[in-house]
Image: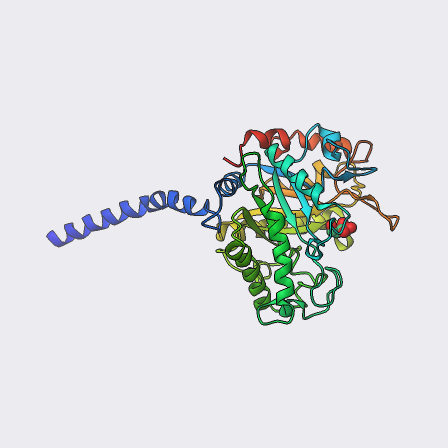
Length: 385
Ligand code: BMA
């Protein structure tokens, strides 16, 4: 009897504990999740990570590459932005590119002067916006562009490789740029640095056909630890991103580790085989679901790191295709690619409308949806505090 009673009491205690265990552990789990990968990150960088994390499933920051630099039919006009022309507000997140900084050039591969990029970054930060940088760096082995995809470049820049010293000097130039980004009180401006983007594709020299998964992971680790430890930069959140993908295994094949990465994303364009709305919606939705689960299992922030439908010929694309597909997913930001306008080749390139463009009224309508944040509402979130 005694034994039975004892067993029952023990069973009840266990049941009670098991019932409350998830509640007991939940706060620790979410606390853990809210820490960025760099334990020495500056207060503003830690806050950015924590605040973005808290927006998961709630809001989506709308972003645009090179937004204040130029748009369709204009360049470098103080205060101008195609998004602002339409909505009265700047985006919530701004993308810029560092390509050619490695060569010591004064402007990037799309002719944006780095001095201007610096001042656009400072202005964006003062408005409470978020900044992300990509880097279409040249091929260090051949001297060609980022699209010069002959194999061997990744292996050549790893420690022991013939181009390691050259690549390291390129990282020094990136570090010098990042080190000069300061807010009004002298604090370092937090940056989301998106290295080696679309690495599961074959078009860049760091792509999947040009190196092994181990080489790619080693390159990530080398680059991040160099910036973090050697250059003592602690204002960076690192974004890992693929192009469109087919499975969680494909997504993480070249993922370098939770101790290095903060944001997990992918890029997708409505183009080529995805030109049709239904084909695009199906793959886009599937990849967003896969990203939700992979980011959540790694406790990282999910993001749509680049997207677009060039010239947006469908006048209701924003409210009938884009928003319904993203609405129930977890990514905290979506960055539309650049409004290059008419290029030298004669082709036009723009991914957000401008006044008069076919999808302009529809974009304006979407900008009023509560879930999507632009300048005014990101400001109220005090994302750096
Ligand atoms: C591409 C195009 C190019 C540009 C490159 C880097 O997708 O927009 O015109 O040079 O991005 O920004």
